[in-house]
Image (cartoon, rainbow, N blue to C red; front, side):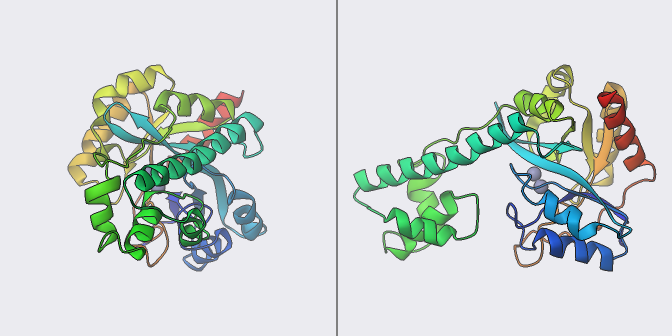
Length: 278
Ligand SMILES: [Zn+2]
Ligand SMILES: [Zn+2]
């Protein structure tokens, strides 16, 4: 069954396979009413998506998903109703993007020191349109140059988290992401909280101003939903949800609209945003 609301959708502005326009056309074909475009670390697709939806019954909520680093690993923070033209937000996102390039170059230096020189230009070519240059592209370059048999082997031997050529990524802390989202006028929601042991830090994030929890998500079991719903109620958090749609052909297969959301969720999100603005 297709739900008419999906608050977690990616496009080719980050790592999705459909352009923002294609995402909107698909949503319209499915008869959807509301989607939120939540690309990783970028708001670049929002203008195009809103233009594609102009004059149609589809509402596109401007959003993003910031990849942050917590003490126990990756934490994703969704921002809804952010103002994409907010300059301090864009400045932070630019720094994150540049940090990816610096990090990739450092890994290539280390690989050269280990006797595996790669052409930087070739790594850029492999990354192609993907704005998030990183380890998968370096792994392919290593395989192509014959230093390893497969990209998997590149991770296992050299660029995995314990590998000799690994360089950590500069990331925001989740508290910073919450603050940046608020400054840009948005509502901050902890994404798919069952992917990491973050929930024990939930009180800290609530203290930092967290507004909501992504309770409804493809991998969440009914028990997860119940448990997260209880936590949301305890801390006065909004509940949101979505499919984390990335488009076809990427191995992340939840279709847009495939997560059923309870009624009233969008109006509560919108009310929260309007209250914050007031
Ligand atoms: Zn995520
Ligand atoms: Zn996502």
